[in-house]
View 1 (cartoon, rainbow, N blue to C red):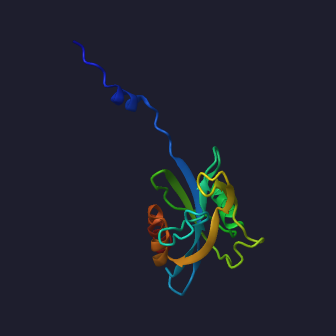
View 2: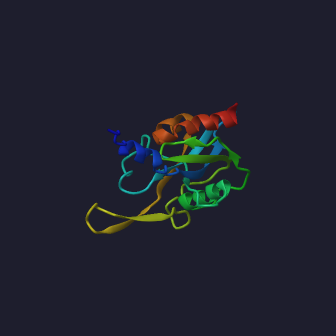
Length: 179
């Protein structure tokens, strides 16, 4: 009697794997003191109700999905402008190694510059928005900013502010700028 094929195994082997998306972003940094590594980086706090009260490991670098055929540096500049509400400062982008953050790849660039974020949220400097049903199952759709706060953090403080999957960014920035 012939063995029955294991359809579960066969299906898993023949199903194409969904390719991970890639996000691109800019880690904007500024010198905060006289030491070579006295740096601060600009982080963005996600908008919307799920992140409202999340501070520790609730921040991110300004980044977003790379569109098909889009250059990574161009995507990083576009996403920075969309999330921050202002274009990145002029300067050369320096690529960091791409990292795998679970559901997607993250391609980042460091850029030295300063950005006054005190006007963030005003009509002069505002992030793009998204719409979602809120409260859930209410049938009501509410608009929220993609980013509700921007703030400068030291590299040490950034380790406790960044989403856990993004904490390795701090080491990459340190290696690129302080070695």
